[in-house]
Length: 621
Image (cartoon, rainbow, N blue to C red; front, side, top):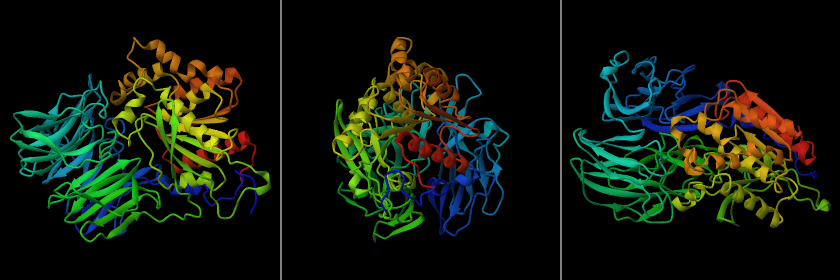
């Protein structure tokens, strides 16, 4: 059928997008079953735990979600007998739930917990107490018999006193522990220390940007770090709490085994009992490899190639969860000896007739090369009139963080646009992870400049190549991505419209309301206060809102603690004063990111209608 771009009939309705957007949150071998965490958008984003038998392990209204470091992670684990340990979303206490039983609390009321790790029958967690000043964090061992639920003194503190902690790991003989810690004036991808301790002495094995220590023997530890500029695996011999010799890099190639430590549950590799290591290697997209003891490696032919986590191992079997460029998000079980790959959850193959493959795009920017993924309009039942010689409209997506990255994964949320005749360009601007330390440090001191230059360069590169209508390119992003959206609109001249979801609009306001984890983040991205206050004012979109001359759609969660509604409402008021076309939507019950089906549906409907008004087309029902 011939019809203008943007008007194509699509099976990817907002309802379908909401239903197809559950988030996979870890997986584990449990006896003869495989368990995984999965969000339920229809229940407000409640995170349950499911089994490969078809059973729902964690029933409503319970939800496994941590708020430690604000972004949480590592909210559940299980033992071989099928006992579930999880952090309840409402009270942030750790609970134990025997198979078929009811949850009982293991920790006292008050502090939050996350990053659960069960080793040799011992349960460890990162503990966060925001009721005291300064806020206090620690790694604790939690008795699994429930004795500490009303007696905090029975919680054994492994370490406390530093600003933040992650990745507790117990040696096989139980005599020593390792973890990652970092100071509040740095982000963990800038500087984080790997520490080992025997209870009386401690040693920092690395002080650069260490991640995920794993003991491979009582006298050997493996971890990831980036002294070469890419996160790579290192092996270190130890004696007691001391290093023996120097660390050996296990594999050397142009990729990262690691990611920004935003959440506590990610695992980028797992050692096998025979000395091999299964690891994720990221250079834009992910590859999963098996590294032999001699350092040679071979790739596992696996659909998962985006934000892959190596969740668990059992013999030669490995559980991986993540996204894919050819399937829906899922959980896969891989036997590294036979090469057999089994899709355990999700992972339904996508239809290439509807789901366009992402093309990797590299354009020259004023600060260096800019990486992106492009998805062209794709619909097997529709095409634009050939005689019109019409170029398609595009929407440029800007990820949050800003220290995050996109991978070109297949997504119903992308097909929502492309199946209607609207192309998508997903940009990894300077500052993104997945391309090494130098690429992510490009944004240091340059937030509001480098990111804006890069998304503009990517959008113009697409138009210059004759792939997009230069008069119909919109930009959309959330949180830090919303900041880049509004900053790009202030710059003017490239984008015909902007969509900001809970975007940052004023840096001083952000600094005043920042939670602990990001309290000093902006200092590295822009400069320290009060010395750089003039720069904070000059960079903020709110300061120059009068320069925005294209329509803007603003969407905000009412319960957002990271970017409170006051930010979106300030830019709303400024746009109203300037007489700029705009729409502001406040969603009750939503925080930093939209989770409920009702919100996801309403937001997509509003975005599509908004672009239709701006670009002059009537979307098909």
